[in-house]
Image 1: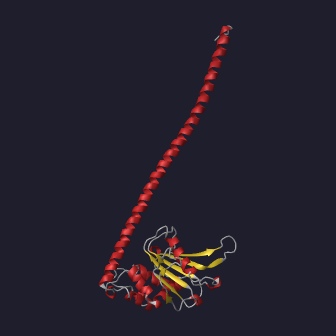
Image 2 (image 1 turned 120 degrees about the horizontal axis):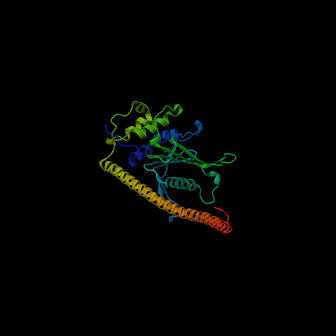
Image 3 (image 1 turned 180 degrees about the horizontal axis):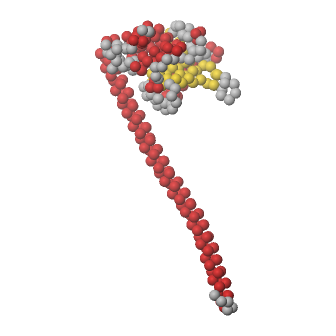
Length: 297
């Protein structure tokens, strides 16, 4: 049996954008719900294209977008490479989904929360944690939270399958995303024993895709490889430019400091030499006067 990588655009959207039971299990496992009452039991898929009310404004598309019975919206994205603008893009998309709920003249209290779940196949933070939960929080005094938007970022390369106890499904889903690819011939037993994961695995079997889809799948990875190369090149060029500019700036500052210190040292030495010469001339003058008066050597 040959499998495709579930992180690819084609497979990710097929698994989580076409099967409500799978996206429900996925969201419940990965979102920071604090009690069972918050968990999702039903979802309706929404148009992943976030069209602005003003046609002149920016349009955007997400991987999966859905909402539950209470009106909460969930945006799920699989990001292959980290860029400095990605957080702004996530904020933009979630904010657009939030404000689009309200018609002109509507009551703000009718707005439902928007959760943005972002799986990143790259690293962007220096710490060891793979799970990052962002909210709008008052920091100085009350720690009060402004509800409405919540952002979850998961750095997949940092994930390690440890025993997380009550987070068992989170571990299984992240193992599904990180352990299965084109080289997989046998999926681990503990993954296949779970009904939701088992179904998700069956969705990425190569035999489940048509020839044009497989060609698109290969093209996707070619595009990812090319993009990585460009990003790596840009980072390298940026580093080289930064080093060059830093070196030039350092040399300039060093030269200016050297000239300044040289001038100061020259003035200091000139004063000292002038004072020494003055003292020598004074001694010679005194000695000549004493000699003229017949004082012995």
